[in-house]
Image 1 (tube, rainbow, N blue to C red):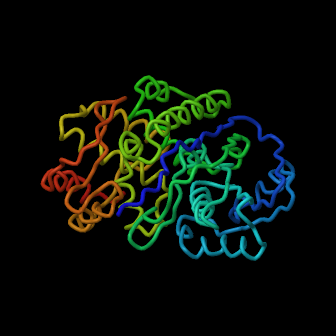
Image 2 (image 1 turned 90 degrees about the horizontal axis):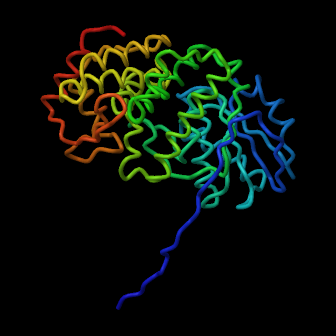
Image 3 (image 1 turned 180 degrees about the vertical axis):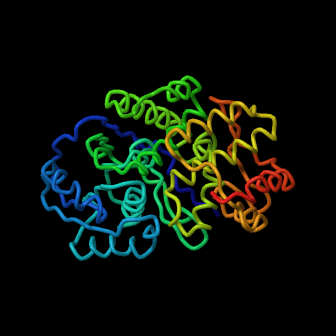
Length: 351
């Protein structure tokens, strides 16, 4: 006997990304703002002036990648239960990528899924982490290995929040912008080489271009079964670096910066990229004081960590390698010998 459950239907997960001064927002339901100690002190009052809700709560977490864990998720969920949130309630992710990922993940699992919106406060989260519906947390095995795809209902990008962003955090966000330019748009990359991001008009133009690029990719491949994986350029290497350094030495964008340099070296050895192209990418990263080198103390251990990457299988490691500047290749044909030869180039430098 066979019983069929006919669930084939189209679900519209479309939403708008607003790049402008934060508008006044009205919600006829319970709302919880999830933020961290740093953002709360700087901008919570500003946000609350723009929100009118039936009932408003604030959940404040510790600031840092090391707090992107089950304990923080439990704190969010417990607060929702204690304040009797229901399936019609709403979460607001108010912070950087860590807050956005954890708020989205909590929304995806609370009572099997409630709505959330993103109000990102860092350049990295504005151009990358807040867009696309990837949510999750870290554990002892690696970064974002526990999570879900859960799209926000809206994203509001206000460059006002960047006025208090430390220069190091700003540079970390720039790394993700470079990532999208290298993989999908050579003209954008060349524009970045001479762009002055201290000019607000130019900054908004760059944010819009980066967000539009990612939005187009997500629209083609929401659940990362194909081309969306290309947005992980630099991340396969970078996630290992973050895990090795316990998420305390490098910001995410800094680790991605190093990861892109490593991926470029792989691309050069695969004859997909010229040495001059790899050099121009490194020079652009250095322009914003991003790290481009890392000392690998145990090459074999670093190599084995690749197999925990979400794109990899038990026997094959999938790498995102640039095909020149403006194009990208997703490859699972990199031999161990080739990868070890790349890693050996990073085995004697204290970055």
